Image (cartoon, rainbow, N blue to C red; front, side, top):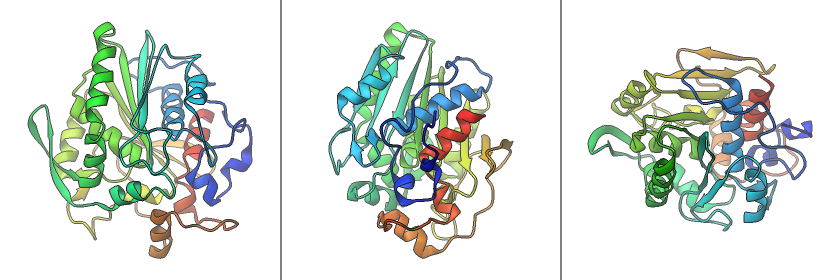
Length: 310
């Protein structure tokens, strides 16, 4: 729950970093409850986990003790994935946390000044994807590469949890780049008791991939959240990279006044300067400037705040 509303201002720091210590309390709302029906408290826990995966207090990187201190009251199992506390890490990162009722698998989004993250985001060639040994369309090469860099660890943690918790829900989540990795992990794990919550997710694959994901969404919880004009949810642009599509699933759009409504398809592309988008991807925004809405709306804390209010 947000304690300092300055965190909602359209500044570069609020776009790239979670709130400072004391400005936000994670997992403070109603409890996560497993089940097929959509519940805003579950979405709030997923959004909190997606932001916590950055493991930062503003620009200050959390320690492992900091992360465990936040997860400890809620989860008996707490494991990091990748080099969570290393600057300029070159692989995917995140954490797995579980208890007797449910677990969360959260992936980290793009970090400012991490050249490897930026390269992964920009590696937009479409490559073959498989799920359960079967073709599942074509996906963003950079996203796939980042997930594969930590895939043995992800599978190990999921298998260890499933050994004692065969039917408990595993909520898979992430923001931005982390959301894209969550989408791929959800499809590749083929875990019938998992759910997917994405926040500010870019396009991940082509029509065949989206159909594979859409088929799962018919029987399992798959929810995409888009904050107002969040431009990242519209890239890669199909006009630049032919073949990219959005999946057919439950889409929740957050409006400027904080209202949230479910849509049947993604909203249209907002107007944004290509130079602004370039600067966002490079992470070179100067301090003291006010970001345009399509960029400011990508801030992870905005997702957390408005969903918790709902």
